[in-house]
Every structure is written in C-alpha cells, then in structure tokens.
Image 1 (spheres, each protein chain N blue to C red):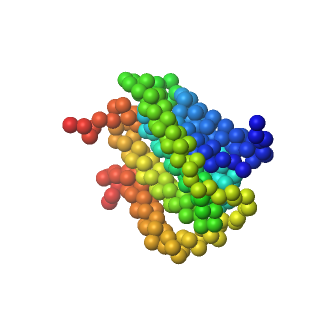
Image 2 (tube, chains in turn yellow, orange; image 1 turned 45 degrees about the vertical axis):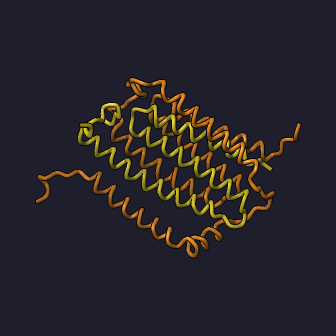
Image 3 (cartoon, rainbow over the protein chains, first blue to last red; image 1 turned 60 degrees about the horizontal axis):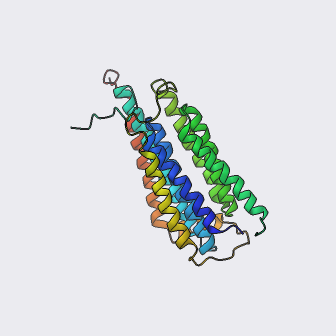
Length: 102
Length: 175
C-alpha cells in the first residue's frame, strides 16, 4: 500500500517544475510545455484522492477527463496563437513580445 | 524499518521517470529534446495512473497527451524552430534567477499543506482493482451530463478558433 502523501508529494514537485518552466523559458512553446506539466500534476492529485477517499465513485477520475479535454483545447488554441504571432512578427520570444504594451 | 513492497518500488521507479524527465524539460537547451522528454514524462504519469488502478485514464493519457498534444507541439516547433534554435539563450535575459525562489516557495507551501492535511484525511484501505471505464462512462452520461456537453462545446470552439487563428489570410487569393 502506497501512502497517499507520496502521490501528493510527487504532484507538488511536478507542479513546481511546471511553474519553473513557465517563469524561466523564453520560447513560447516552452511555456506551453510548463502549463501541460502543471495540468498533469493536478490530474495526479485528483486521481489519487479519488482512489483513496471514494474508491467506488470515481468523481476525481471524471474530473481528470474534463481536465484532459480542456488541456487539449488549450494546447490547440495556444499553438495556433503562437503560429499566428510567428507569422506576423517572425519570432516567438516572449522577452520581445511587447506589441500590446502601451 | 518498514518493509518495502513491490508496489512501492514501482512507485519510486515511475516517480523517478516523471520527475527526472520533467527536470530535463526545464533545463535542456534544445527545445526539441525538451519535447521528447515531455513525452517521456507524460508516459510516466500514465504509469502513475496505472498504479492508482485508473486504467481508462492511463489509456486516455497516452492517446491524448502523447498522441495528440505532443504531435501538435512538434508541428508548431518545426514551423518556428529556426528562430529559437539551441544556440540562442533559452532563459530570460533579466531576472533569470527569480524563478528559482518562486518555484521553491510554491513547493514548500504545497508540500506543507499536503503532508499536514493529507495525513488527516479519511483514507480507505483499497487493495482491489476495479475496472473504471464503465463507471466513468455511466457518470459522464448521467450525473455529469451537462459538463460533458459543455466539454464538447469547448472542443468545438477550440477547433474552430485554432483554425481561424492559424489560417493565413492572404487577400490576393480570395478571388
């Protein structure tokens, strides 16, 4: 039997690696990768708590399915925005993306 | 010294794959290698789902994340890779040290909350393996029907939005 704290600790570590990726990357696609890591950490939490607290109801797994749906939609729209930015200003470096600043 | 079961050994192996490849994702310079390690990390998360006896979610993880999102990111990378190749600096110019304390602080807060309150949670001793696909399907079509339909609308809107955003608008060939 694996203690539930191990799953929660794994999820916390994965979430923080995702936060680090979002804060430190200059490439916009790297930032999207960090967001996907954070969503996965949240999913691990949902599934672990569903398994250990209500093992026959599985509400957590249903919500993990919804999180996956939203992650797929977010990746599609985010990558479309990145491609559109690349087409218009020829780079995807978030250090220099300041055309919406006044 | 408590004895270590086979399940716990499997957990450590899977957690090492997940965290190790996630660290490679945030540290490597070549963004293409980062993407491959991200796929490995997603595969490890599917292993975590299997350890939690979530068979449907493990399959969906492989299909959606590795089969769809990684491939989508790979296409976007190949279209934009020459502007952000490995010889350019991959991290922020100013403030490149700031992410370390922020990420560490988030980790400390989450870990304290989990360890303190996770131990008090009412935890069942579950050992049996339940097939989850039928339960998830029934829940999606009865209790969670409205969120299920909303999710399909979100997918439709995202699909149309992605096509509109990424479409090249050339005024000359719109005869």
